[in-house]
Length: 174
Image (cartoon, rainbow, N blue to C red; front, side):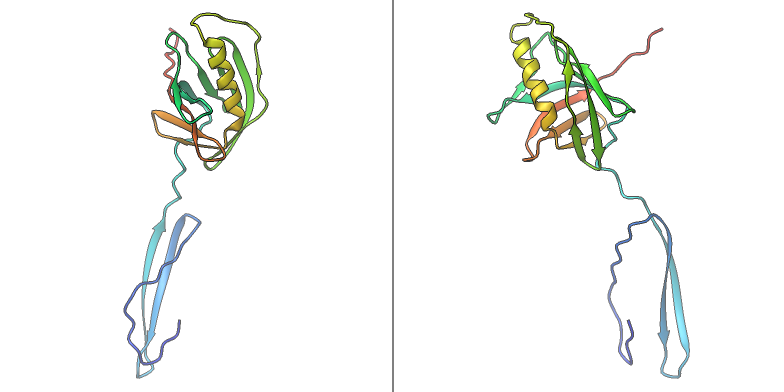
């Protein structure tokens, strides 16, 4: 910006994408032709991630979307898990059977591929197979996720929360 014989008072905004040190220089040419400048160096920090990364995390399902607008709690006596491996493989227990799928993340988006699961038919607790089928049907509709250190929410393409997990603490074996 070049200004001749005018005062300048204000701010300039600069949206920087790359982290690192950036030096700004403001130079003023006075009425007698003398030049005066001032420099300021700022440290641009990396942008925060959209929550914690999924790779290498373990979760236990707390509730799931029923398809009509309500969230249902997981049946007492059942446990549905999701283990997001560092190799982009998702596996866990769907309540009765184990399952496997590939997954991909980019920023806050999540895509879960075709799911393979066991074929055992369980009857305890009552309703376990319906819960398992609902869960396995919801996984491929995942479009986005958000995390905190203790929770994972998965949303569909319409932005609805479809799965809510809590961190699954795995105790090391002695």
